[in-house]
Length: 82
Length: 254
Image (tube, rainbow over the protein chains, first blue to last red):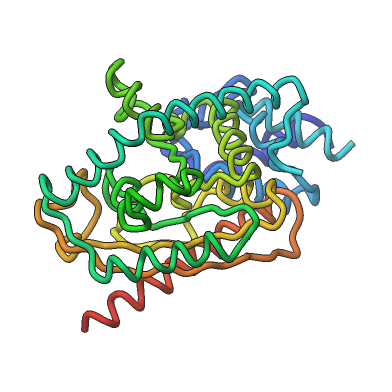
């Protein structure tokens, strides 16, 4: 699975949690999930759990702390997929 | 496992916590009675079966030798103060200072001025910016976990912020409380549900002269999940217990 495909799936997963749809439309790897997409911090856990299901991976608590931007999420998933 | 930093960081955290605890202890003959007087006589708060609340907390603290964490519902900005008052008398806290719970107040509200920062420092508080930088939030969670693993008692609200619906919603909890629990072997969770008669939804403060009712129960959640899912599952179990206690509260008032 290439980075573009992971990015598209990450954005799709984020969609229901995003308060700023405008920011989502112009999302890039550098887009900040909490600050720019306005995802509630408590809901970030739901997002990451959806990553686990969608990509069939297991993410540890500590990994969640590293997910600040869409790019961080993509990199984490890429690393887990191997 | 969650919330395990490297040894040098651990030593620094330990020193800071011990220093804060000892300063808090030195100032406690002033701070604890002042808080009690403010809640009871200035704000006029009362708690139904206060002795029962304190007896149950004493029983759990004395019976369980392991780490303890208090998890409570969250409706007003001063819930942690009211709960600490409900759970122990000044004499109890003087004799068993570890049972005066550590708290994690919102930094922007409770640490806005130098005076407030000093005051909450003396009341065993570790301010946190909710929804702020993930690594900073995690560092505060780690400090709490370290305190709990050293047989201090910490108080944390599974919903993170005040319940916007006025009710405990197990589906909306964050995973922080689960991370702490999983980081501390043999931890017991003391669930506290407390609500004022006039508290329909969330607010900044309970009304003056408020009468609180509620209950206390101890649980040791288990999970078969791993990783983040395990932390979320633990947090939901705790919130579910609080939701059940809330249901009992409303059933009793019918």
